[in-house]
Amino acid sequence: MTQAFSARTKRVGSCKLAAAIFAMLSVCAALSARAADDAKPTPIQTGTGHHFACTDYSGGKVFIVDKAGRVEWEYKTGSCNDLWVLPNGNLLFNTGKGVLEVDRDKKTVFSYESAGEVYACQRLENGNTFIGECTDARLIEVEPSGKIAFELKIPAPDAKYAGHAYIRNARKLANGNYLVCFYSQEVVRELDPKGNVVAEIPAASGPHSAARLANGNTIVACGDYKKAPTVFEVDKAGKTVWQVTHDELPGISLKFMTGFQRLPNGNTVMTNWVGHGEFGKAPGIIEVTPDKKVVWTFQDDATMKTFSSVQLLDVPGDPAKGDIIH
Image (cartoon, rainbow, N blue to C red; front, side, top):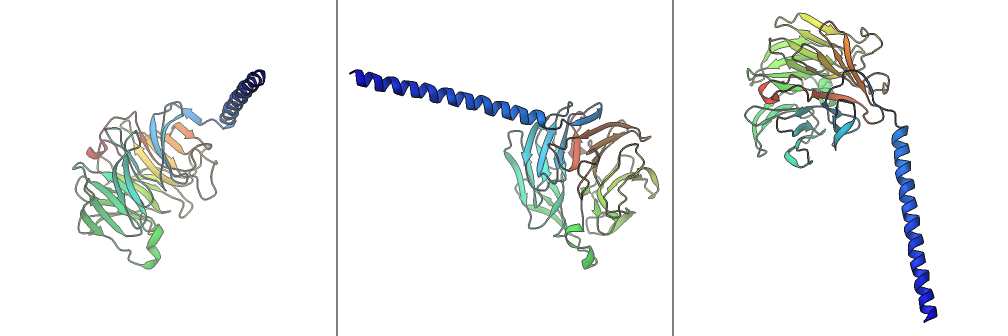
């Protein structure tokens, strides 16, 4: 009996010792995690922050960030560079070779898969989703069921323009036409539903994104194709009425301008893609006034690699109705 009692005592002691060791290891792990978090560079933010959603093209993620610069939601996806936050809170974005809509619980609401690269998506007012397929060289509109309701093939005029660098972002306009960034050809074209060119805007260094403003002007963001990234606005006649060039903002260099949002107050929020060896050398998001005064910048090198699209969540409006211009 004494031996049995002794054995039980040893087992109890062993269990207590194991529990103590486990608790100590848990505390150490928590402290290590906290130390790792403390060691991470904090987001660098100047000016008044915004609540916003953004894409990280190279990191393959979509983020929602609060005004203090803290990530409050993220979703792992493919090479994402176009993003919309819908009125119901869902996020619509491209995935490299497709388009997804997910809710805040990360449940898939809409999905389209493509054989080739996709750089553009847009929710239309009728509920369909507009998609620009780069390597497959076509613009399509897809019903919620996944059925293709419209297709416009836009083959490259020459093989040297086709493939990965053929087109980037695209938008369906209120007039029923399509605004398409032909990156390798360094031009933005407005096409009618039959593919006829209605208007053409030269865009040196490779247009990545373009949007039509309410006044009929067009804003374009260009990459580093000719090492001269810029964001510019032209009127209906094609005359440049506003622009920010790569080297004119004090202390900030534009590396590869991928996206933007024109705000109701006239300010422009721009995404500055810092790939191609430029990582960490400039803020990823820059807000400027019409007279090009920098009022907000955001950079989080520890969490986000390359920004490609941004939408502010403190600017109300329905993107499908044209209230959000980006």
